Amino acid sequence: MNIEYKNESYTIDNVSVSNLAETYGTPCFVYSEDSISKNYNEINNAFSNNKKKVYYSVKANSNLSILKLLSELGSGFDIVSMGELDRVLKIGASPKNIVYSGVGKSESDIKKSIELGIYCINVESFSELERINKIASQLKTKAPVAIRVNPNIDPGSHEYISTGLESTKFGINLKNMMDAFMYADKENFIDLIGIDYHIGSQIETLGPFIEAVFSVAKIIKELKANNISVDLIDMGGGLGIDYGKNKVPLLKEYGEALNKAIKDNKLEDYNIILELGRSIVGNAGYLLTKVEYIKKDSEKNYVIVDAGMDNLIRPALYSAWHNIICTKTHENKKKILCDVVGPVCECADFLGKDRELIVEQDDILVVTACGAYASSMASNYNSRPKPAEIIIKNKEAKLISKREEVKDLYAREIII
Ligand code: LLP
Image (cartoon, rainbow, N blue to C red; front, side, top):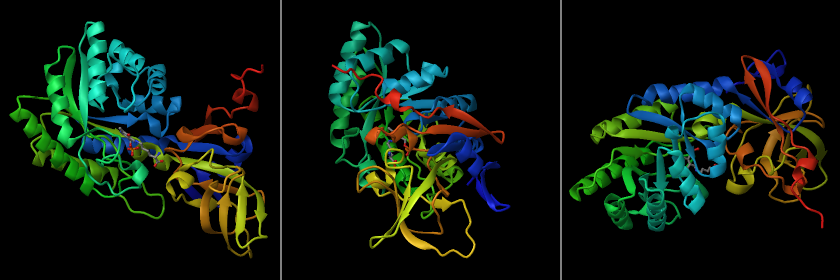
């Protein structure tokens, strides 16, 4: 954690939280460049070599400065839309360092990816494979693909992010996958380069990851028995982070455990990639918010703040728990049991429930572990502009996304 309490005030990478709130206004997101670099380097050092590489999963946080930082650190990119593709190209990444997943790729998405020459399209259905073959034939080229299999492994996370279960829309189930591999192997306009899986997100134990490596090794044997060979294994992402109440393996431990599983299954000769998002940026971000009111007239105490579910939807959507720190100290004041709620008109608009805080009106609160799936999932619900984003680089705050203005919200609308 880069948030620290010293000399009676809170700092993020040595920059005062209250100064940040004053300078940039609240709500705002603050990121630590040191944390992002440290996380990336930790997994890169433990895992990568000339055959193994980390691809940052853009959906976790797609701010251009963060993408540029990761590109400079040597990361590849895992994208799921043309919007994400545009962002990654904008910061100068090579298409050769991009893999493209997602169940709903349109004809034009596929055409653009083939024309650009991205490294690999991760195919999630038989009909997608047929579509890719048709488009590649029109372009008179071969499309590089990996088949995303669904290994039916329970990652033990929230049901909305447990993508490795057969009952989800992701990947091709084990019983159908061989048809897809055979088709991809024989068709002229498809270059079958790999096998791909992603079993879920916020996975807190190593077991499911190891199980998945064993499962893919078994599939590769089956493919060999059918004279089909691949040289890429995309192992997806999913390592969880510590939100303050849960335990997770270190990135280093995760990398080492994967290395061992790769060795145990004699997969060292394959090109292997990881698509990590949350574990690289998650604990590097904070949401700063101001207390507008404290309301004590019902059975509960409500601490009403200026950030809401439009800024951080994780508590509402996944019952996710984020730590909330009050940055002001109040001598002789008692803790209150409270729900920290936003101004949005929904009962689901809360950042935390049943918290014990010593808090007063106008205090600045910090919601921790907001680097991943916070700003990237933000909305404009209730016509609320998106907050500013700031990164701390060499102990200095830099604005990396301006606060939206209300006029930006209706700029595309037409009054008739
Ligand atoms: N690869 C694929 C194909 C994915 O679908 C995902 C995440 C990742 C990689 C990166 O997973 P990570 O390393 O970040 O766990 N909004 C949810 C998480 C959704 C994850 C979606 N897919 C949340 O806030 O918990």
